[in-house]
Each structure stands twice: as C-alpha cells, then as structure tokens.
Image 1 (cartoon, protein in one colour):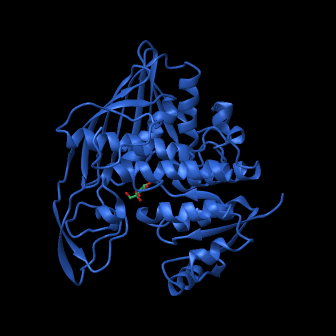
Image 2: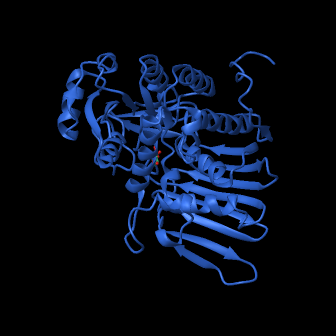
Amino acid sequence: MKRLGMGLIGPGFIATHHIDAVRRLGDVDVIGVAASSHDSAKKRARELNAGHAYASYVELLADPAVQVVHNTTPNHLHREISLAALRAGKHVISDKPLASSAEESRELVEAARAAGVAHVVTFNYRGHALVQQARAMIAKGKLGAPVFVHGRYLQDWLTDERAYTWRLDPKLGGASSALGDIGSHWCDLAEHVTGSRITAVLADLHTVVPIRQAPATSAKAFAKRGKAAAQREIAITSEDLASVLLRFDNGARGCLIVGQVLPGHKNDLRLEVNGRLASVAWQQEQPNALWVGHHAQANTLLERDPALLDPSARSYAHLPAGHPEAWADAFRNLIADAYTWIRQGGSPETRPPALPTFEDGYRNSLVIDAMLRSHAAGGIWQAVDDGHEPPRKKGKRG
Ligand code: SOE
C-alpha cells in the first residue's frame, strides 16, 4: 500500500489523539507539525515525536510530502487553515466544529467540492462499533418507526468558576459554548444513528456561571484547577447549560440536555431511540454495551461481540468480546475511514457511510444556529435552515 504523509496544524489537546490514531494505521507517515510559532512547533514536535517542526502552516502546506492535513487549531482558525489546505490540494481532516459559523462552514463545503479532495470533520463518536450497530438496527426496521429520540451530553470540567477556556470567548470559540462544543456531537449522532434530520428546535439556554476568574492562561478541557496565579474577572455570554426540544423529519419528537457545569458528569453522552417495536440506548462512558428495550419480552444488553454485530458494524470492532474498546479506538476508526476515503480519491461516491464530512459539519452548524435563534427569540420553535439557501447575514433583514 502506498504510504501517505500527514501534517498537523495546531498541536494542542486533541492533536495527540490524531497522531496516535494515524500511527495505528501503519501506512501513514507523520511528516510534521505547524503551530502558532516555530518555537511552539519545535516543542510539540519533540513532545509528540511528530517529525518536522515547520516555521509556519504555509510552509507545511507547501511540502509535497504532506498529502493530508489535520486541522486541530482553535475554532476561530478552522476556516483560514482548512481553506488554505484545500486550495493547496490537500485532503483535510478537521476537528469539530467545522468553522465558527454556518456561513464559514458553507464556504468550506464549497471549497472542498471545488478541490475534489477528501474532507472530514471528527464527529468521533460515530466510530464506536455499537453506535454503528444501533444505526444498522434502525435502518433495518428492527425498532419499527422511531417516535422519540432523546439524550444528554453532560460534563463538569467547567463547574469551578476559576476554570476558563478559549471556548468561552465568542471571538475564539464561537457564539455558542456547550451546544457548539458538545451538543454538536449529540446532534450529529442522533441524525446519523436514526438516518433522519432535525427539522425544528425549541431551546432554553442558560449561563450558570456568568462571571469567571480567568487565569493568565486558558484551562485545558478536564484539567483540574490548581492554585492559579494572575486572576482577572471575565463576563461569560455563551451558554453552559441547554435544554432543547426537537422535531425530526420522520415525525419523531426529541429532547436534549447539555451542560458543562454539572458535578459528577465527566463525559456523559447518552443517546436513546424509542421505536414502535423496540428501543436502543448507548452511553459513551459504557461504550461496550447497547441496551435494547422491549415491551412484550425481556430487555437485553448487547455486549460488543463482533460475532453478534451487523456486518456494517463488525469492522468497527477490532477485539473479541470481553476486551473493551473505547474512546481512542473509536477515534482511530474514524481516522481509518478517512484514510480509506483518501486512498479511494475522496470522491462523493467512495465515502465510507459512517464517515462525517464537511457537509455534516455544515449541517451541524445549521442545527446549532437554529437553537441559538430559538433561545434569542424568547424560546420559540425555529426551523433548521435546509442549507440550500445561504444562511442569513447578520443584521440583514429578510
Ligand atoms: C471538551 O468539552 C471536549 O474535549 C470536547 O471539545 C470534545 O469534542 C469532546 O469529545 C470531549 O470534551
């Protein structure tokens, strides 16, 4: 198999997992990294054993040894970096969200189509074998018509008012925090697993911690608060708590709760789909079991046993039953699908069915935008833009 070269731009928290996943494929070389400065790139290249430290991302994009660019920069740089990589003819794998707004996301979709390369957004929870099992069961009618889709994504790493991250700064993280950062994962999973689309939302957003004591440097996700040195008060305008009602295009109703200030919840993503015949529920913190609920027979708990999985889910399980697979394995599965697509030329016809692309990233931004609009309008139902018309420019009437 011809070896491919990858370059990574923005070597922060998630970059480690991109590089780890790529290394597990066995036929991709980590060529190098670019960061906010050459010194930072040198430091991270050493720490990650990630090859060359480029002086800038422009230098990385000019390197013919790099065919694939992983964009793991902070949200506000996603558009600039992905656009430059696409224009340089590189395949692009971007951390979520695709960009800071629906408008930017749409621009990236159009640029990716024009470039004719693979374009992937890391909605990594799709990579779990039992998520694919749930999707296959629904697609094959095992649940009957889905009538209710509900769940949660709850965390507590922002509970302490001294915790601060760039994600809470609208200029860097975007207008939304909890919904944009983790609600986006749940919405993508709900649409992917059910095969249906969220058409309308009714959202109630809240900021539980409106003032934070920010240290000189930003908190990393899940970092424990040490005794911070310099403190400054920052007013928080984005939501850290959200309750949302949903309507789907297959007539199903739904509801979602999202929060990042909820003590005891670490990375508590749960999705449940109730059909007219049966139900399924999957929890990210117990990823090797899928609950299957019945009305007229005993409920079951399907363990992640490749021998028992639908053929479409089996390739996402690499270990036998009783050998747990988890977050990093799902991440690797998504990256493996991305490189399979790249090797097949990155055309729409060859995309692996579970692989989220820039189109899914754009779609996801439209759903989150509708939730923000719903809340801003006082909590009224808002239709999700279908993405065919350019999203309304801010401040323009009509
Ligand atoms: C922080 O909320 C975070 O790292 C998110 O940014 C990730 O997308 C999620 O998978 C885990 O939590």
